[in-house]
Every structure is written in structure tokens, then in C-alpha cells.
Length: 340
Image (cartoon, rainbow, N blue to C red):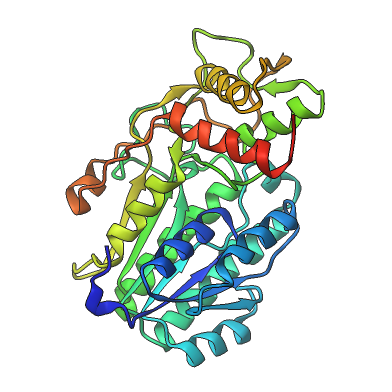
């Protein structure tokens, strides 16, 4: 957690209207920090949700919003020059594995060029710590679980994963050349209220209330079901916040950590829990109509994080069981969309 004496530090958070960016910004603002939020409010998913998040940040006096794209180098440089952030948290990225197969251009634009610009700005206007989003997808089709940061990650199975691995390499290079203290976080399936509508749990709720069936990409094989390390948003934010005051101090000041729940759930268990939580939220029984299909290209059978390194570094320990986290999501969803 940032120290009280650092309250005058300015945070620049890219992707501030996004899921993780919003929650992190709100937490820092509640603690009295100054936050500069950058976001291009793209239409990859419902922009109304992004505006809803932003509206919750606007009342904070110490919040400044810059609408723009991190792939616009001039805009990013001017933002760094004007606000001189001490801490940068780069969460702006084009997300999604399947979408990267259909729309590769936007991944290069945001995840490669945008991140390069962020590194350049951090070099030009030196920062105390650059924290950036990587992804569990860098582990590709790795069959050894749990995934550890020392595992081989040179065989990505999606362009999205390749861009995130590239970010780690780029950050390492800039840390080596310019001594920028940088920390990469490999996120594992983050969920919660106001989450991303392209995530499976959110889509399942959408489908149910639209009277449609949900597609489950596990071949209907319950014995060898997909495993996912579902991590509640509050645990993710606590992990990021804990790292802020712990920049790497090695000769090359760059570190990469897994940040996940360290407790994988079968996809079907997750789905059954979501059904129960939506039942609780609506006051009636919710059962999804299910269609089982083969696993999709770019998807992996299991994501399961070893979080030992992060625990050693900052005492990170996720505390939210899926029944609790999904209930919070279900209650929010039913209220936000006014569904019965």
C-alpha cells in the first residue's frame, strides 16, 4: 500500500475506464491520491458501461480524465509532460483471445505501439515505478500446472498472447537500457461487478436473460473439464496496490509476477455457482440452457497461477471465494440491467 507521505504522488492509469483501471483508480482516489486517467473509450464492448465507471470517478476532486489513445504518441508525451506522474499503471490494452484472431490490427496498435509509447514517455519523463498488464495467456498450451514465472513462455497460441509476451520483453529492454523500474503482472481471469461483458461469466448472464443458450467449449467432457483461476477484482486491486511501493531494485529493475487466485475451479463448477448466485439475486431458479462445443483455437485447457513470488514480495493472498465474488456480480448485474 502507498505510504501516507507519498499522497502527493501523481498516478497515471491508462485504461482508467476499463474494468481493472476503474477499480484501481477509485481505490487510489479514496485514499487521497491524485489520479490522471487515460482511456480512448473504444467500442470493443458497451461504451455505456465505460461511461458508468467514469461517472463514479468524476466526483473525486483529484481525478483528471484525458480521453485519448496511448497509440497517439504526441498525446501521451504531452500528458506525461503536463502531469509528471510518479507511478504509471498501464492497463490500456486490446483484450480478448478470440477477438485477436478476427481483428489483429487493433492488438498491434494498442498492445505494441501503445505500450512502446508508454515506455518512451517513462524514459523521457522518469517515473518511480511502471506497472503494466501482462496476461496468463503468455503460458500458451503449457501443460505443467501451476504456471510459474520461470516456465517457458515462447510458444503463444494467440496474437493477444504474443503481444503480451512482447510487452514483457520490451519492458525488460527499457529497464536494462534506461533503468526504468518496471513490473509486469500476468492476470488470471479477473471477474466482478462492472466487469468486461466479453468475459464468459458476464456473457452467460446476458444469454440467460435474452432467453438464449450458453456455449461451453469443453466438448461436454466433465471429467477433463477446463480449469480457470478466477480472481475477484478486489483481490487484484489489493495486489497491484501492494506492489506500488515495491519497485524492482535489481541491476535490471524489471520483474514479472503472476496475479491470480491460486485455486483453480472447474468451469462447470463456476457455471453452477453463477446459476445459484443469479437465482439468489432474482428470487427465482436460474438454470442455463447449455450447448457443448470443442475448445476454440487459442484457448487453453487450464489456467492456474502459482502466486508464491507475489506472496513472498508483498504478502499477496486472495481472500474472495467464487460464491462470494459471483454473488456480488449477480446482485450488481440484476440491479444494473433491471432484470427480473
